Image 1 (cartoon, rainbow, N blue to C red):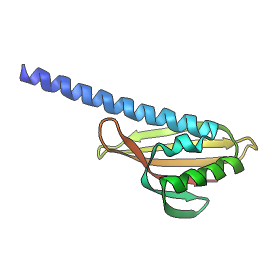
Image 2: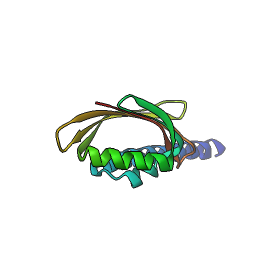
Image 3: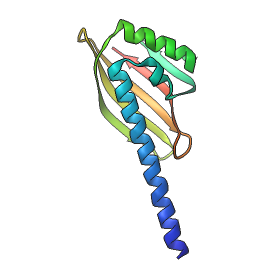
Length: 130
C-alpha cells in the first residue's frame, strides 16, 4: 500500500511540474506575441541575465520591465513561435523561439528558466539576437 502511495505522489508531482512548465511556455508565447512587458515580467526571477543585441547585463525585474517595454515599442510584435523547448534533469528549462516584428524583422529568443518548486518557475536568462 505504501508503494502505491509513493507512485501516486510521484505521478502527481510530475504532473504538476509539467503543468507549471506548460503554463510558463504559454505565458511566454502570449506575452511576446502581444508585446506585454508587464505580464512577461511576472515570469522573471529577481535578477535576470539579459542580452539584447550584444548588450549583456544582470537586471532586476523592474529594470527588465522597462527594457522590454522599450523593446516592444521599438520592435512591435507580429508573432512569436516557440521552436524548441527542453526540460533538463537539474530543474533548468530551455526554450528557443522566433519573434517576428510588424516590420518583418526576425529575432531569435533564447530563454533559460529555473524550476523553484512544483508550481514556481522563473526566467533566469534571456538572449535576443537579430
